Image 1: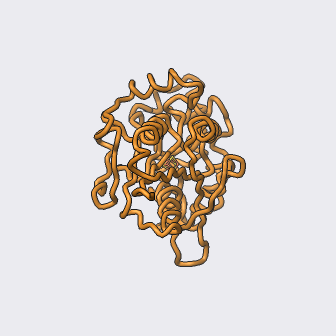
Image 2 (image 1 turned 90 degrees about the vertical axis):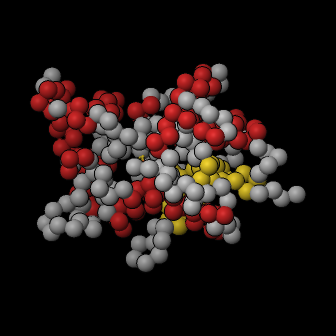
Image 3 (image 1 turned 180 degrees about the vertical axis):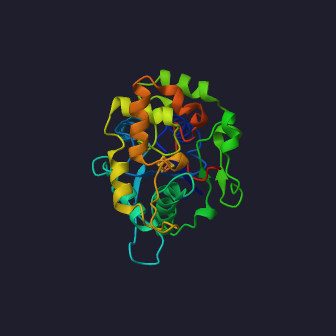
Amino acid sequence: MNQPKLQISFSGGRTSAYMTKLILDNWKDKYDFIVTFANTGKEHPKTLEFIHNCDTIFGFNTVWLEANVFMDERKGTGFKIVSYETASRNGEPFEQVIQKYGISNPSYLHCTRELKLAPMRSYLASLGINHKEIPTAIGIRADEKRRISKTAGVDNIIYPLITEWPSDKQDVLDFWEDQLFDLGLDEWDGNCVGCFKKSFKKIFKQLDTNSSSLEWHKNMEQKYGSVKCPIENTKRVFFRGNTSAEGVIEMWKQDRQNNPTQLNLDLYENGGCSESCEVYEST
Ligand code: SF4
């Protein structure tokens, strides 16, 4: 017998995976599940490996989605189904979104909307489901209530880690300590590599590990900086304080030459979007 459907939005973070496991283990007599993950093409390779492990070891049966952008049409972003093997790893879906909508940054927050939300909604629509008609579970914990969406009621969003199994960060870490595999990333290192929501200090740490980690961003700014740029003869850039990728790399070099005080990095320390980039998140 068909049961009501529940979408589980799996972001690829530890908390989101923990929530997915709890739901699959406890609600199988209540719902038929649709587990979705939307790949931006800039996810850390370990995130993709983690999702693959969740599929093969825990049986998540995740539908791997990517944005399908209709370039010269007034048509909203659709979806493509990919897999662990075929998922983009060089920022391809992200580049398409930038080509149409411009560089995303703290003033233009369209990347989550176009790369995650739109493909998920479009995928549900292809199944004949309006996203508001079925609940969508999001992995936000009881200690993160500030991240709850203002439109949760209208969009039929549920937060099982707040309402059903109230959990905090330690609960999640304790769970993963007992498993055969883990994400293998520090909290600051999750999501898209070089995500503009991260603090500069976190981006510097990524540059320490891989000094080319912002080359893609530099390239995007050069190619598409003028797309949807409201001020003539200027370019849109990714990072806070209107800082270009090249500017961040310069700051990183200066910082690593033991001159950190001039940069006043503490101003930027409260970067969001740490372990997971969730759809329907309050910003
Ligand atoms: S992780 Fe950052 S860059 Fe990637 S989609 Fe989310 S907000 Fe955008």
